[in-house]
Image (cartoon, rainbow, N blue to C red; front, side, top):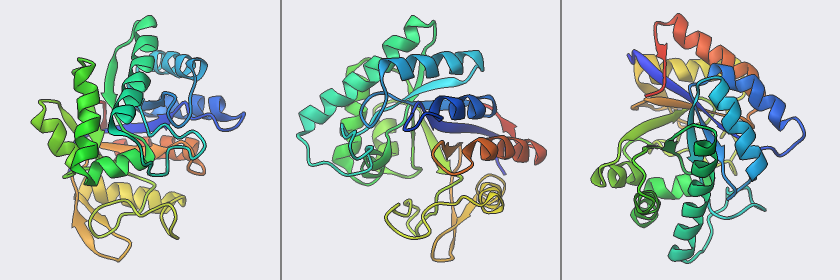
Length: 252
């Protein structure tokens, strides 16, 4: 059983008029946030507003860089020159870092978004490129990612602190990769299913896969996606559920 867990959420992803309102509803119940910084969505305005909201609630601030793919919301793998991708990631991270520091805050972590997250989990070259982007900026931040992944190995090899992330609202395959959003049954929205998975991962340190297997999993931070249906309610309920079971909800 884990005695401490971080609860994070991808924010600043304003695809509709209620985006800012949704962020305001979620922020009081999380302990770290991953702010979209222009690759898949996000602007100077949305970044600054989300940073200020995180500051108000004492939530740790992380950059959420992605493939430069706004039309596909960063959820498509791009065939892109490695140098161009690295420069894009550095620009995205630096944009958020600059805004955070303008507001008296520090960048706490980096978490790749969408297809970049998945590719960095399984492809060493992509994982190394993400970590090189962070190192070339001179940042000593935490890296959020899939446990036992190429990203974890690259981060630790480079001397960065890695935080093993699990998902309260996503379904796992037998290899502990996330089930593709293209397939049926990839997302959990039912409250009881989400809380049951959170209980498994944090209390029992296992997860039930799409195929029905039970697998060991290391959870240090739980992600809830802000675009999951009912995310504002789920954020509050996950927080309360964890505390009820004796788990401290705190950032690392």
